[in-house]
Image (cartoon, rainbow over all chains, first blue to last red; front, side, top):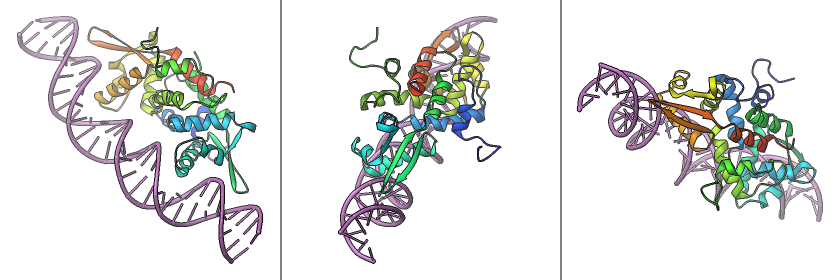
Length: 118
Length: 118
DNA sequence: CCTAGATATCGACAACCATCAATATCTAGG
DNA sequence: CCTAGATATTGATGGTTGTCGATATCTAGG
């Protein structure tokens, strides 16, 4: 399933973990989860995530997203790249336009890891 | 209840928000939530949180926590301060020792914000 | 009081990061 | 092909952050 059998991606790690408060996290696990949290620990990327998720059909074109911010196009492109490479956004190109879509399972797994076992 | 009636702390913001994917986040809301996520977006702080939560009685002494890491005492103290000031850890001093306790409600609200509305 | 031990603060430094302007790379239409 | 528009990449810059050593502050016991 996964590319490697020896190392888990951040998203894979999150999917298989018990909640943060249930048992002490190993150093390796913590180091694999942190990048995922870093990815969403930015106001612009938070808004990008919620904009994409709330958009019609669950996906949004970069051109729409650019207009929603008072930031340069390269900056938005950079943030989208971070979210995509962390596994939180899927990317699909159609013609000249690029559409992003939230990987809801990854997000909900991450939420469960943080808030689970309340 | 809260110190100010005009501004919400990050923790208060999280407690009253609909999930990330449900509706577009306002700029102000995003900027209040991001610091909370930054606070947990670090491997050491993630392990601190889970160590404290999993400890007997739900609280842990700094002296125990120091021993769990290969880091200097000031560094651990710094991370604990970040977690405490962000509202994720409660702090209580008893004699010479300082005990930290996870604010579970804050954590579960944060988890719901991220993963809610799956 | 004085000392020893626990925790916090300070100052410095290197690594990282958000942002921009400039530029490159695509793709569809003409 | 050539052009126009959409998105990505690059390089530079200022600001933030994780870490440490040194030091300060507290507190209990002697």
